[in-house]
Length: 390
Image 1 (cartoon, rainbow, N blue to C red):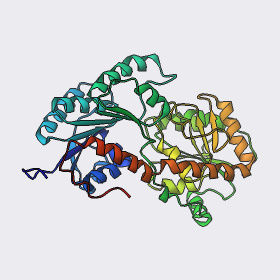
Image 2: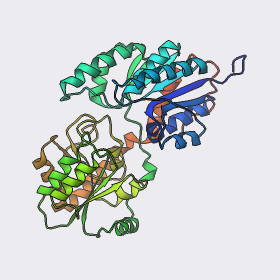
Image 3: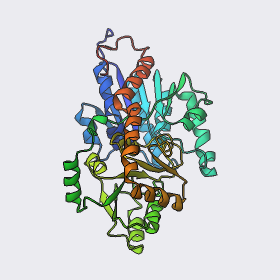
Image 4: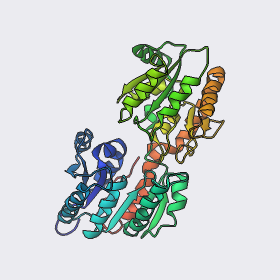
């Protein structure tokens, strides 16, 4: 401890508290164990209470999702003033707009160590030209104000290695998934969950856990279900909400699929819903490294997903699922049909998924992040470092 007796401080910054609550609580707890005061910055939402519950001091910031909204200027001023007042030793930023503003504020406030986790760059193979023209130059410039840039898929890692970061570009396999929450299929629990949802034991159940949006591309899933011809009854569970919900509901009704597709909204029983399913699917247009698929792996489920960055990192085609072309409805129909008509494949592929999930276990990701954080805090001589993860 320094002579003033002050404890070191770390700030976690994201566009909304919900992001921090969903993905970063274990890392906040690690800093607390090391003797840090932990602060969080975000736009107020239903995740704030969960962050505060573990003893983190929250600061509300008027972040706007679009980088072109003027309220972000106010957000930058709020961040800079607070950073200068608090005197952070470490700042870890997340999400596109918040990460840019957070790094500018950290630079203005002389924060010694700045980390940035890229949860999937907005420029990627096949991305619209406007994404490259808008986001690529910004990320490259902001790399100069970043000590450690963490990526979570192979494509982003290879590209980011060419960025002029101050210290190092690292590859960390996502934010982790708690495999202990997926202890293996329990037939009785699965039966009870299906009964609560009004689903029969012999129905083939597809589950998609994702925001209802153009990016998550549930349209391709609905199109595939419309074209799928099978004698076995099929149900599809859409778990999540979002601005695309009304459009998807209208499409479902127009195709006469209202009895097939269930809109479940936001749920806290996702592990049970995945357990009750036969297949986990995510047909998104772009991803970083999707937790929804990592949870599917941990639950020992076969996967049907699109051939885009992040998704293809988690599925070995033909081993633990199928990788289909983005927009290729026929391929998607083929993948589901093959699984429906070859039930023995579900168990084999599910076993492969469970095995693959080991490398994404939160325990191992935490260990990896612990090493990164210790390197970033070498300049803080009075960090306790009395307890390690695990």
